[in-house]
Length: 409
Length: 127
Ligand SMILES: Cc1ncc(COP(=O)(O)O)c(C=O)c1O
Image 1: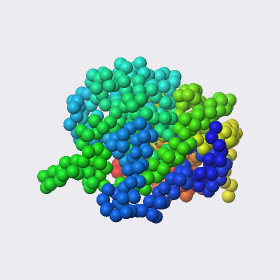
Image 2: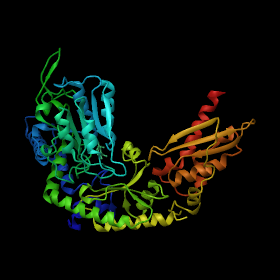
Image 3: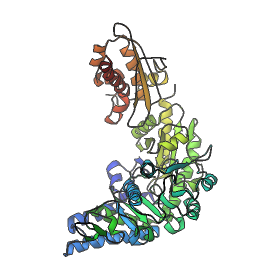
Image 4: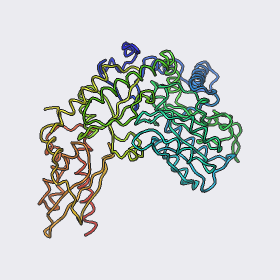
């Protein structure tokens, strides 16, 4: 287990008290001092625009920005030229779909072609696909979960993906059930038909090691704020061969190699996709967050989370009237457990827990289709990261018992 | 003030909500979704010839605050006429609930009130 003293790295815990059980990490993680310092250094010591000025501050800012790109590339097994900075996972998903929509693909979309996604996608991954399907007259197909479980139906995937499939989009982990998906298995099938494979890694990154080559996907994205980075920053990774044939998703300064009254030509990736002044401090902060996580070790973070998940499953199971919306296998869980209590609305659970110093989330978690597939309305969700402790779990369990007491009638 | 919003009356209304049923063929009804959690409720009202509420009911699941709010609101508006309905304000709902409602729970507390407003808005258009 990671030492409890890790909380000292986070000003949030000094402010809110070390005993707050912050179990809403799937919504956003906390920020270590190192990340705040990195961003402050930019604003206070070398603030300037990047890739433009010929003076010291601008060169420093540009170097810090590109240094972060290299770190992130290494972190997911990609090449720096394959990392596009965005405003977060939502922006990545939207920009990617616009890029594909704007481009003449080697294997172009034809009316009646199919897009395959899953019922467990976050709305930010799903809605851009729905709109693309609408515009290009594609058929959007949903891979379901197994009856009575939360795991994807992989055998069905193998039937659903065909020569008609142009895009397959699947998240690496569900932000509701915590289920880690076998993306590599799905990508392999998709590639036998030449489909483009997109992976939303937002709930998984920073929790398990990620290697884009092992996953075998074409595009992958995530937000920085769920892995100790700042808000408003994220990345889109894409295979070089694909990026260099794609049209930009947004247009503006810093992306053109040539421009005239008649039109413009683009720089190579990734610059062609980063029009405008980016979130420079955000990029630097995300780079520092990755340094911070790597210093702890992703394997250590994973081991810590697995032990917390095991304990949480064991404790929750002892509570009568609870329904755990997850596969009770810690090895397949990213660190997210959603649950229902008989006769108590998730919202009321969250409110009572908050009075007990336990921060969880209640609702649909931007994944309504999954809740429909599970035939439930909202859930209460506890989500863990490496600074959580066994005491946090004790506080969660105690809070749930208090909620049950309040509603005992 | 007592910080605890889960007072006996809230818990009671939640466990045994008043007027939670379906009125078949109600003329006036409105569905509304709680933007916070996505829960859906439907409020139905029947008016008699004099323009007063002769029957009222609601359906749909939700948190204890929204269920108690609906239960109390539906009790309160029975027999009121249109003008009296229009004079109701969010403050009346908070008073009925009688517990401190934080800004984050205002949507829950006022879910029934919002449905009532929707119904009232539609009425002059019809007449
Ligand atoms: C799986 C998943 N995808 C995408 C997102 C969207 O991330 P953001 O709101 O940072 O754009 C989230 C965050 O809630 C998520 O959990």
